[in-house]
Length: 248
Image 1 (tube, rainbow, N blue to C red):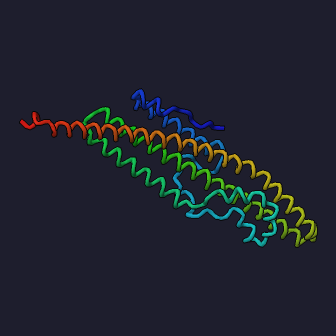
Image 2 (image 1 turned 90 degrees about the horizontal axis):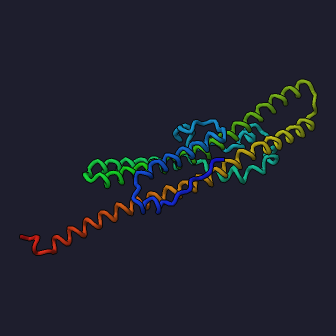
Image 3 (image 1 turned 120 degrees about the vertical axis):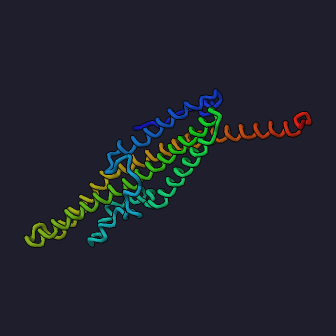
């Protein structure tokens, strides 16, 4: 299990170690991507969310499509967990795009600054926003990838049951009742098997939420630092303007 990061951002900011944010952000991003690999999902941690359809199908839909909807009862225990996996890839992708655009804007602003410390603060803020986008993206991969995994396994089960049913229809062995009972048992077994990775994925999402909280804290502190510097410069300019000696 990948543990969430633990850092007192206030302590880092207090000592002015702005550059150290970057190494921490890199660690957070690496841990977020490791969540995807650790679950063994059929996706690459570096994938964009565009790798998925705009709406990942209901994982249990293959049962209805094959006229086996009655088997959903054997998988009913999965439904509450599956309902927690929001399949809206478009919304998740939009969030990532907005964060990336914001980071690019901050990075562009940094190139206009002449003060090295101020420029470093802007660049570090951009890096932290990029890291946040990565955690959001990998959270989407966890959710969509798990739905995809369950959908694929259910479709595989349906394919096997349909093939076995056709064979039974030709041979008369086993009987329809025996086939139905065996199908229910296999569906229940699959449900128990899939409950593990789904539960692990939900646990991973909790850790992802903690990572987002860490990064949001960093963004807030870095932004406050920028605002404080701007206010100090404004106050200095105001004092010079109010001093008659400065007027010549």
